[in-house]
Image 1 (cartoon, rainbow, N blue to C red):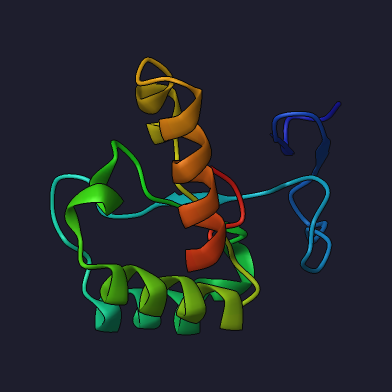
Image 2: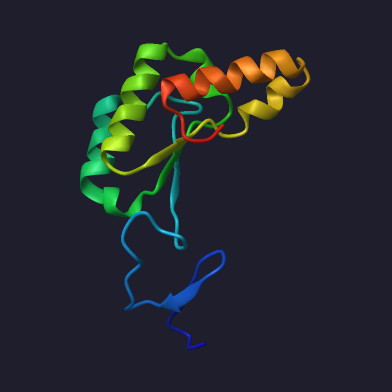
Length: 119
């Protein structure tokens, strides 16, 4: 491969080549959502409107969504979906595994009802 190649996780292509259109099977970019600071809806909207064509996923990391009002989370999820961006809860589901199967199942059902794509 030439020195001008860009490498992604499981696919490499030349710098002058464009990534495929969304939804992509490779060259996927996942953006971390709020973790230590809150991202306002305006800030996310700006990201989606300016570089949204390059953002495939939004990940709420570190269980940050567990501290936010459900109405805010739902609005963020809906905004992401309008820009063809999937939304993930990150690794928070692992945190709930030690609380037993009932707690885990309830969590997954709540995530589905709010519109998360993966948990």
